[in-house]
Length: 289
Ligand code: C2E
Ligand code: MG
Ligand code: MG
Ligand code: MG
Image (tube, rainbow, N blue to C red; front, side, top):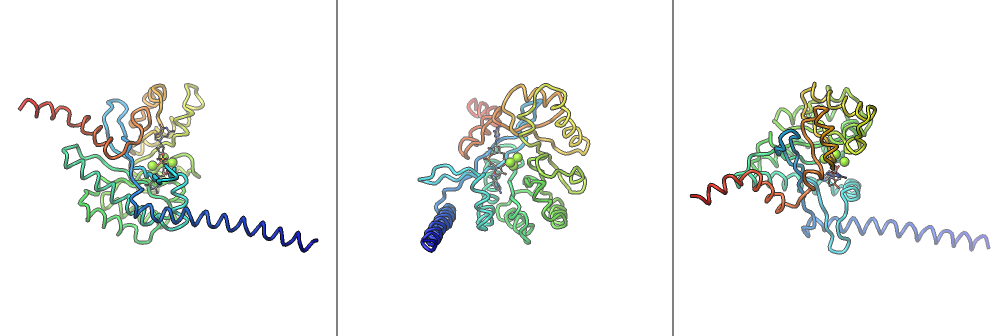
């Protein structure tokens, strides 16, 4: 009987393993084909100067729409891509698509805007990172100072020496460096000084907990002040309400990003928004002529 139980147990275990493994394989396969089948796309969210409402930049965000699964969240997609190394071709595709999109906007006469592209740890730690980025800039012809890399503290922490070297080289090329989700990792304030950053993005959890009470304000206020003093662009993420925006402005936060201004939009919709924003005056003139 023990033997039977053992065998049953083994079979049960084995079946579970197989199911798990094949699920991962299936997702992996689907993700493999996602690139070929053009199921991946980039959405774009504006970054806005709080005082004036001026659009100061655009962040590119990856989207995967599978014909049966529907939308797969980046929170699932990115870890899967990281595990399978698919992050390398997918990341390269995203970088190139974002740079190309930025140039397409310029061709429409829209003011050149920095385009921010997220890099996950594995992607950032490619030994030939700088070369690959350079290649994309050369292939597309985008000015390096219009590209901004978004990385997190956790990514830097995994290999500080590599990060410093790579970031120095990228800065020398003119590429901007943004520290994403600031305040959520094993934050080390010294990172802000040790690495050649240009932008600090305050994580949306701070924005969301922003209430008009002294303790909540103290932390976010300190981050903003620090960023301002280090002459970094400071962007608050995840702004959803006017109240949040007003508090941020009082704390001298210069820029914000979030649903309050615009959800991330597909290429067509963001292009429409940018045209309306930057070209509506010109279009009126065109009609008169
Ligand atoms: P992230 O870079 O911090 O991006 C901000 C996330 O907040 C985005 O989620 C965006 O859609 C969402 N968001 C923007 N405004 C608001 C708001 O007002 N309220 C709320 N609740 N959310 C807001 P998304 O697009 O699902 O991306 C999640 C994460 O996936 C990103 O966080 C980034 O770490 C990663 N990711 C996205 N695209 C890429 C990519 O192309 N490459 C890599 N490596 N990672 C990416
Ligand atoms: Mg980001
Ligand atoms: Mg973020
Ligand atoms: Mg995030």
